[in-house]
Image (cartoon, rainbow, N blue to C red):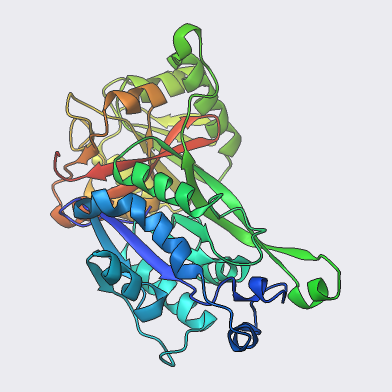
Length: 382
């Protein structure tokens, strides 16, 4: 996931397509290439009003937000009008006009600067622009403002988008899913033909709920959850995939669910479905990673304060974490465990302050069979 700043503010990116939806009121079946025609017909843009509905839910949380905004009519103007502070990213290629190229350039720049969530307003064309520049490592959410909304990356309405972002900012349980980006052929649509095309997938949040593996009282059965997570990991094993599992009863339970004998307090290595190293040293882990291949690190909270790194797993050194890749560091925790933290972030203390900062922000948490939640990580307790 994207990274947060040392002050643990939630980093929110905002991009608005101010021309989105114009073609709808003008009965033009879309806005691509016909925005000027719609404006000439006297159609008033509505995208800002849609985004305003979303941002109203974030006004009480503005002190917890660090907002990166597209310039002028693509975000900064509306934020200033509503009383939000924002850092402007990028510039318009041909001001005051806006374009799809502006959206793509600014989306890429925001991802590079590290936003926890990229919030954008538009229709399927805007979703395609975002998809052209980003992949599922960047969390996104669309505010529906266009004529065509065939893509699954959009909230059901602006209010729902605001409520969902507020949950993320407050550290509530939010599930991660990959959603399709689709668009319709507008010219064919204007001729009475509906043709949609799949362009890719993006990672979007949705409210997390207990939906499986529950008994009386709606409580999870942890052994069943670990069995499910283990089944998902086994399905992903191949000749080029390796997993480094940190210590803890949760990761030990995963190995036991696979019929493997791991260590409670050590770091184990799983490759090709077999336990190739038990209680490995930092040097042994480094030698494994240096051999190449695809690696992931699985950790769980150790100690009473919720540390996922730096407490009992110092074998996972900064050089190993960087070599594996920050996006390949996954936390394993049941939803019951996450709720017990009451919104407090997982903590990191690797001994490398820059790495701790880079690891901060929303991270993926394996919480069930092919199920991932989003939860905050920080270098300092809140």
